[in-house]
Length: 403
Image 1: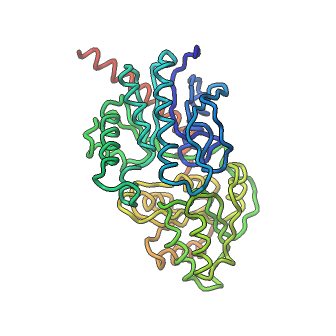
Image 2: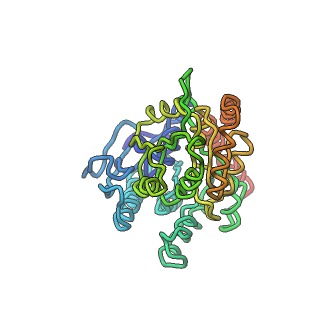
Image 3: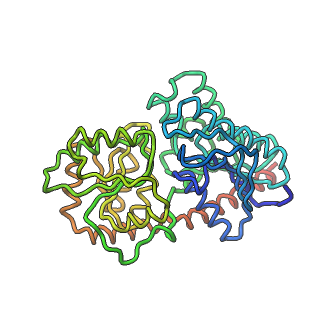
């Protein structure tokens, strides 16, 4: 490849794929390019959500600055553990090879995780004397162990911990989405805190905005249905409401636990209040949010997820929606700071959250949401990344001077 870039971004997923990581990297690319940074993106062939894209068997596919490399593509939504392992492993291996063969493309790379296999690219980059930024979106290993997907103390966990510790220690800069992740990784791996920067997940305010849309008195959930989402607690709380206290709940998105969520609604006798509208495009998601009144964000109240702030919360707030959450930790902080959210840990607390928000003036909550979310624009996030690049070079130059 002849093109010379200021930065190469390695990401397992990238738009038009869906999910928090694809969205974060897609918007980062958009705004870095807008600010004049020459960026190449290396990602896997379009796969996520599983089953949403046709299988492709090309080793490499180019679309301008976007390079797509082959990986295994599960075709079923409920992909097996082996299929997921192949999907998350083949791409990092091929991406590492791509970096070796295209070593002159850039002196700076950004590797975003999860999955932890992506750390291989970061370590290869350091062996090639590249400047490496590691972007951490969530504590994948801690969550996987706590939820039982990786056995605690197993060989797999030890390998991933080793890769993570080496990649973070050797990286020139580490970006993280919350202060809690920063504190935890500094403590766990002894990373130099000076090279760690908090760059919140945020939202693209150019995309997630509402005009004078007519609002329906309804709640909405848009996003992934997975094992970290605690719909069990939320639906039990919703079922505790009296008939005259309920408002419709619209669900959009996909994931391996979606069928369980819909079946649970049937068992609880609340299915008539819940409507599933399928997988939506980003534009359709915005339209749905702008026609709704309250957003829903259920995360398991687990110690390993205390750091988590679902990216959908920023999207809700950007569309003027107060939110009802399930969980503990950072999600509580966002609710308190914005004064546009309520978080419960039990069905009883969730039911009370719904009652409380419906008692309040939703127009005032909408104003609070919009005022608060401005600080979390993806445009500002890109500016922070540029600041990270500049800080990384300053620190490197100072170390060379001191030596």
